[in-house]
Image (tube, rainbow over the protein chains, first blue to last red):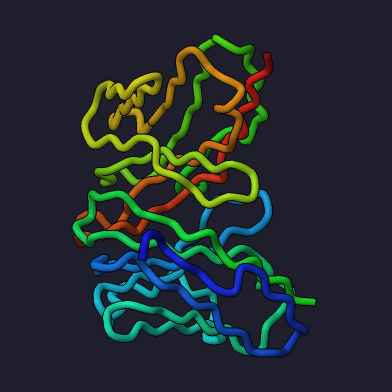
Length: 114
Length: 114
């Protein structure tokens, strides 16, 4: 696609429910990243994919968070048993995968846990 | 100590002035540094990257890096109201692994007034 696509753009859920956030990276980008941005804060690294594998998942806050990537393309971030502190904007980014190149960010998913 | 620190601002400058944004980081081994611009409600956009000590200029933007002092700055010359945004400093902790594990500061909000 022309850019990084994320869906849904907004998600409101009740505490305790599971949610799935989707990211469709730029075609040909092998590297994919998930970040989280809480209100008024900088971005917090969650996980990095190279192809379908995740060499660095050190930023996932707890075992309620998981992510997968299939076909070297679409990635899904799943949050189980959501808590109010999970409320944030979840941003996905992709890049060519060399370490110095530009990250292209999607427009994010605003998650609100009531 | 936070890994990447920025003054939250707001930094208010008149149109046409030079805006100076500063950032310090804690990891002496860091090799690559980035400045992102984020408009309210939008995703971050890369404006400058710098890898070597000294200055790097691109149009109205100059990035400055001093690894000995663990200090990165961004100068915006001839500031315009359209430059009003939050500027995020980012340090790549994954560079040695060949990927972008960017650690972001909380950002400095810049307001350019006519």
